[in-house]
Amino acid sequence: MGRTLSVVKSGDLEIVMTRSFDAPKALVFDAWTKPELVRRWFGPRGCEVVECEIDLRVGGRWRYRLRHDGGMEMVLQGVYQEISRPERLVSLETNEDCDASEGQALATLTLVEHGGVTTLTQVLRYGSERIRDAVLESGMERGVGEGFDKLAEVVAVSARA
Image (cartoon, rainbow, N blue to C red; front, side, top):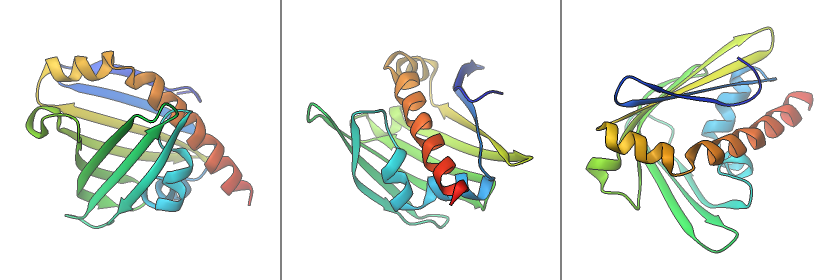
């Protein structure tokens, strides 16, 4: 897998995203779980993380409020189901703008490192094919791709430090 984002449908309910980063998996894991790092990369370009709360424990909550250049805001939040540092995070997540039961996804993040390159795989499992497809049609791939490009910049700088 290369340094560009791959987004594919899997079965009827899942989206699988994969991207590699030139950094050790512990650093990529930290970038997902430390608010000061999440603020630097999460979301598409032209989007700022204006609120970032992370309670990194099973049953703990995370919440990000993003503000786009035009002033539009979006809130993403979740509850950690499993934490295995530095290779796996599982959370039940929702977009505050969606019906919690419909828009909820089980998000499983896996990090595998080979020779200093970490491959990130995130599987998002939705409750219905309709919701999964609506998420894909929302521009999510572009937004996640731009966010992952910023993540690559953050971990590259940190890996050199």
